[in-house]
Image (cartoon, rainbow, N blue to C red; front, side, top):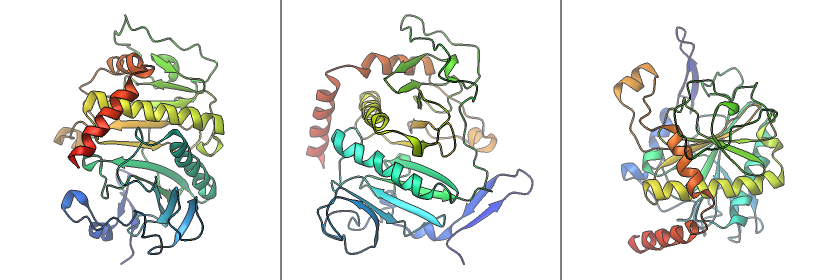
Length: 316
């Protein structure tokens, strides 16, 4: 049997991927974690697709990209964030995190004409991470497979005058349209951070570039620098809220008008949500963006993060 098969439900028109071989992959949650295949010293065990730093198969690398040994698509890659088994976004240096996002861009542009390039990161057992060495996955899904991923409202462009965040007024907005112009936002030089009223998960955050209507592969070096700060700061802020090493996912929208969506996995889906596809969000999105705004430029947050990291490393 093939490693994977794409199947469309003839009634719902929704797609599933049948990939029984993935049940055999190592899984720390199931107690089947091997000696880490991503750590320094094992470079000759698997053929590299791409690397940053070092030469050939030596151990002087900064980023490595490998084929996923348990794929669910013809192109399914593993992007290893660094040689450090324990440090991830929020802990790694700015320079290292920039290399990660630059590698996302390089791999996206390499594969963008082959299908839908979906980049996603799982962190923690609750986020579906099977091996704990920090890594991101990239898959290329055939164009005919319809993925149910929410899109930004195409009418919401940078020409809209966005509402500034008013920390004194966090009342719910009645307008449910997914558009940047409808929400309170936190802004940087190149990005908007916002929490849609239609958020499905508590504390989920969307990060959208101010320069709209582009593929992720068109991200500039300056935008990467800005995104690195945003992503690291969001992880630090959510660490304060949910505890160090909280589980989360993020993905990068694969089509035009890209965005990054960060989802803390602080709740478990119930039977209603699984059965109906209708999510019950128990967190007011306005409170989430207010909390983010309160801490986003806090100069002490990195010190707090370092203290959390030190406490965590003592335990491990």
